[in-house]
Image 1 (cartoon, one colour):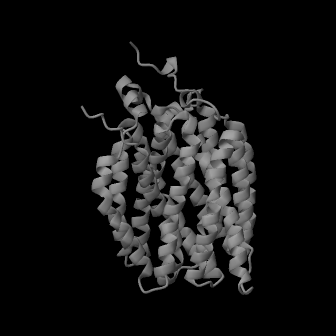
Image 2 (image 1 turned 180 degrees about the horizontal axis):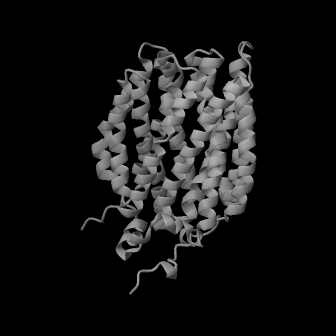
Image 3 (image 1 turned 90 degrees about the horizontal axis):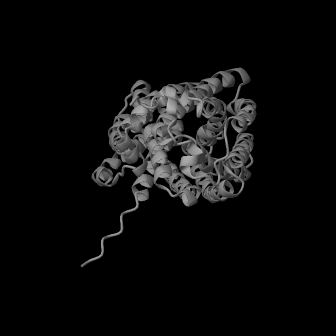
Amino acid sequence: MPEPAEPRSPLGALFLLGGAAQMAMALPMFTAPFVAKEFGLSDAAVAFYSGVISLGAFGAFALARLADRRGRRPVLRLCFAALAPLSLVTALAPGIALYTASQLVSTAFRGALGVVATVAITEVSADAVRAKVHGWFGLVAAAASGLPLGLAAALGDGPNGWRILFALMGALALALPWVWRRTPETGRFERSRASGVERHGRVRDLLAPAWRRRAVGLVAVSLMRGAALGMVGSYAYFHAVDNLAEPAWVASAVLGISGAFGMGGNAVGAILSERWGRRPTQVAGALLTVLAGVAYYQVPAGLGAWTPVSLALAFAGYVFGIQAFAVADRLVDTELFPTRLRGTYAGVRTVGDAAAAVIQNFGLSAAISALGSLPLAIAVLAPTLVVPSLALFWWVTTESRGLALDEAALEKYPADLKEPS
């Protein structure tokens, strides 16, 4: 009698889904200088339209909320299926209005895909290896984010290059049959649904005494810290191509090579999250990210080969810091809330990140107009936002290192929220 087959690990499908979300998020960043050139947009206008696109995160909140009601699997399937047609619409956009509209809607689906995949990865990972799994996922996500960079180097300067990049993103539709079959539902959600607990997963339950401080505090942190970290990363490629006049292939090589070295931050972030703890790893990673990011924008043009070399050194520090930070950040966001609220909080955090992007982009647009340049605006705004956010983060969170997921998340259902018998 043949032995039963080993159950398939769900991580492969979840890594692919999370990687697709990261690729979809990165693509507009690397096509921005070419879109700006075709549509005649200034730096301030690019920041403005990026802010409008970020409002799509309100849709991501609704979808992530649905993941706590209907399950992780249907939301993951829906979001992945939506990315390809939206990318094709973007590729065919005749003007900035349709480009912005299609990317605004895409933001909802790719944002929900990313956060729900992260929630599912935490839920299917054993307590002892959760940090390690998120470290590996960080490598996959970073590689996926780098794929649009390589394509931009090859195609960006060509006629309709950015349109071809979005059209290629539409090829994700080819993977839909496989994704549809392999996308898992997590055992934790199944148990929650079987017990009827998921019916209590209301947004207002995040304000219950057990989770109020961490939920409200982390959203406030995401506004300030997210704006600071976002502004130093989102305009890196745009700055090299548009402001420093580096060829697309040079800018891509700078970001690609230094980004590859910086990926070591995932392993370091996983190790330090287990040895130091989630909180100190987040703080150290965020500080390094902002310091290296600000340094990147202070590199002047006209230094010959030293301009791309200096950019590469600074960007490697930025990538290392953001990758280490992201490992700890994913752990904190998914470990501190129970199963019935994990997707809901992820959706609320997405709205916080969207608000941060609005602050980032509209704030930069105003600051560029006032201060006269993107580098100076980032040098002033990023440190001003990140320092108080880290102090608040330390105060509102508890350390989850070494705790079982149920213990860290306070999974036991509060008696005052139970259904009457």
